[in-house]
Amino acid sequence: MKKLSSIIIVLFFVNNLYSQEKDSTNKFVFLKHEVRLSYGMETFPNFHLNNLFLGGFTANYMYRVVKWFWVGGNINWQFPSDIEYYRWSEYYADGTFKDFEISARNNFLAIAPELRFSYTNKKWTTLYSALSAGYGIHTGIHKKNQLNDFFNNYWFWNITFFGANFHIGKKQSFILGFEFGLGFKGAINVHAGYRF
Image (cartoon, rainbow, N blue to C red; front, side, top):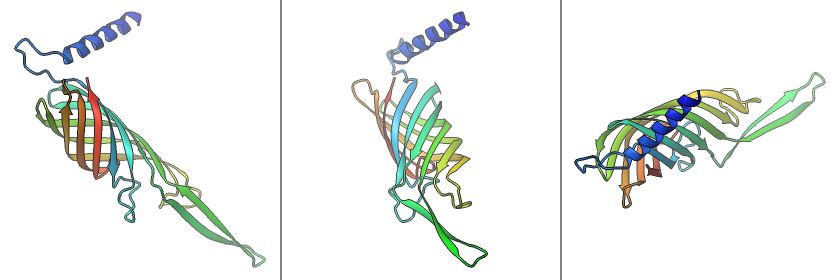
């Protein structure tokens, strides 16, 4: 086990060193790792027509397996600022009744693997599409079961129809970009990150 761990660590460092160098013909070599933070609007499941600008943050890590194919994962947190209320009355046999109210601020935390397919891979730009699906925890009042339903677990997804990374800096290591899609990352999101 110790020998296997040592081999994995050595391969990881060799991979990192290789990914930051130019090849023997002095051509650009694609960086293998990417980390970024994005903010998305019109996110699901916490989408509200009365305020389209409520959204959430996504932390993302991607590894480039080959030039055009990436694997990685997301951690998404959504935080609508409104509070949902559910009110009801209970009637008793003696003819009296009592009013009840539950209120909860909707929050959503999710973890999901992601597959990305880049179709333009240039030194300064990457254009891509992606698919992500995973598991989420929703806190708040859920529309399907409003009474005492403050903790819901379920599967969810995100499709990125079109995304773009613009590489900036001396070694093009910094990223600015945007995505258009549908799902937990939002219909529109902007991101910044780092490649290595």
